[in-house]
Image 1 (cartoon, one colour):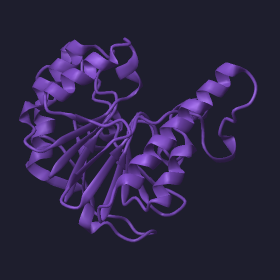
Image 2 (tube, helix red, strand yellow):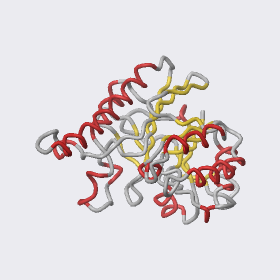
Image 3 (cartoon, helix red, strand yellow):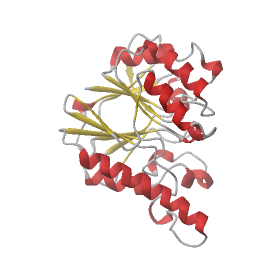
Length: 260
């Protein structure tokens, strides 16, 4: 199975006609398309309707998770309804399966990584912040535990490891992801994880257990490919820990894929 993944398309009314080639390219080179959050810019149902129209060029199944921008206008239920009515499978702790490959999707949350992770201590609002990260981690764990497929793929908006936010200002890195999301990935031997959110982060890293993680935020991929692009990965070509899997970025109009 070949997986196309991209996040942070930030669809607005100005996006009309700009994403169709990207989604068509995903269908040409992959069997499934993952959208890793920040599907819209302000979380408006009208933005979601435009995204659904842009996705008409995608002929493969489309799975999505929400990002922080999709919550901005407090219209999440309406936004998700528009997406699902348009054929997008929106996951929030749920799973989806195809050809013995199981996908688990969550939004994730911030809070920092490793010894620098925020602890649930002090003011109630800080405890609530940490609790949100914990709940997202538990959602991911439950979803992965429910999968009985040979392969497991996780995708989210926030980063589960610090390596893929490297390049962002140190001051904001704790708001770009949470190390609490990493533990379930290793416990359930996830083959690969995709996320977005860190526009100026790094393309790839690995969990402590060696599972590959890819930052597929569109601005990051654009900065590498110099054109709208997405990441395409051949799941069967994944190499053991310590080696590089077979990955390509694909850009509309280039007539194929090129190695990263």
